[in-house]
Length: 152
Image (cartoon, rainbow, N blue to C red):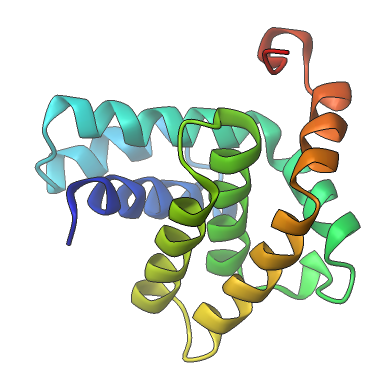
């Protein structure tokens, strides 16, 4: 597994656990880092994803629901939902990851952690979202909390 994929995998595991429990993300991350050896730069990358996605889950879900209404979020498996949140955060908010890379990484995570149909599903949803990338960036720019506003 590629190094940044390992970091994304760890971030996904933390987001998944916190999505299904009341466990604090910092505690979950600490436990996961004790179980999985990641170099400091990759641990920091995972931390950026986790604490980038966590406070914006509602906004990310809103964007996903708006641009992919044929997939109601309450009917999407928790692992799939978190993969979509991460990829959307990477290409629309962080913007440090090229869109194609974010999608490919999300599909890889879907193959590792999801059901047999998850990779195809994630690819389809993200393909729809990418078609509206600039609209999503504008929408998120308007609804993000002030301290996390996108750079213009």
